[in-house]
Image 1 (cartoon, helix red, strand yellow):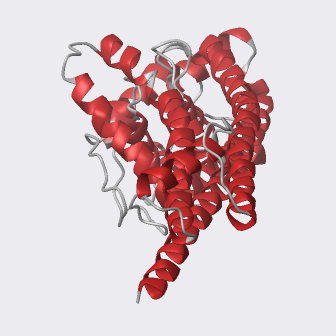
Image 2 (tube, rainbow, N blue to C red):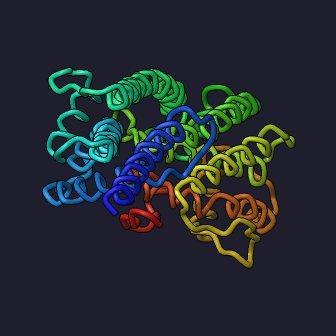
Image 3 (tube, rainbow, N blue to C red):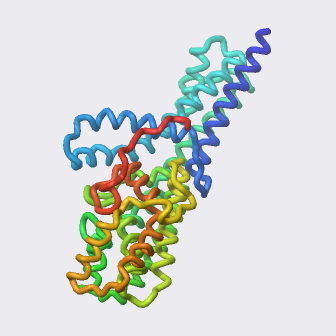
Length: 358
């Protein structure tokens, strides 16, 4: 009977170690979006801790200062979580291999995973198991060390474009302000270059923020900036340019919008947030009202921007583009606690911390 129990304990311990290693590989090495349960648990637990901390914040600047630590600390919390689970799994295996007590098995496991050497295995089988644990521990540490430069390189690429947009769209970023500044500085005929560069940016975001999911929660260096609100401003400006501003049709605006809502949907899919994958206007309403759209058009016209004469057709065209990214944009604003910006975070629903496993 004891032999059967030890076999089961060994198998359970091995399963814990294998699942932990697989979690690390899926979170760091696998070059595609993967909804990893263990990583989700760590981030949700950390979010609940930070929610308690946020009770002491009375302004957005205070909340932003607190949430700036959320993603970095959550990433760093992954390593001790993985090492703890590996230690527990190997503790079970050492006990099943004949170590007299659970405490002694834990000492050997802890000594092995951190390669400290203060507790040694005393037979060939347990020695080999201890060596394998040391290799697993070193592998997990090496993976996280290699993970950080890759993540910060993607972060830097993202934030460079967001910073450049501040010059063109203001802070907070606004689609109307983007069009007005281009008219004053470059001329509206140069908007096509912006759409082309942001199409590439959206493609990069769709790849990096799904394979490195923690990137979505890394906040910009300055409180008023956010990659989500910047994305919303560019998408709205491209939609206005394609449907409302009296310009020659430029396919680059259409491609930018499509690249944008596909990237946002890929990220939202990773976090399993609900949205309508096949929306159609007017059956599916958007969060921007006709009155807001008319006010934006009146402002553009008052500043000398030529608009298409059929305002109703322009509204239908703009809403037809916006409906593709309206839900996912607001969902990401809520998830990342984005700063206030018109037509995006100003109407995002209040964030509710999700369950750990669902």
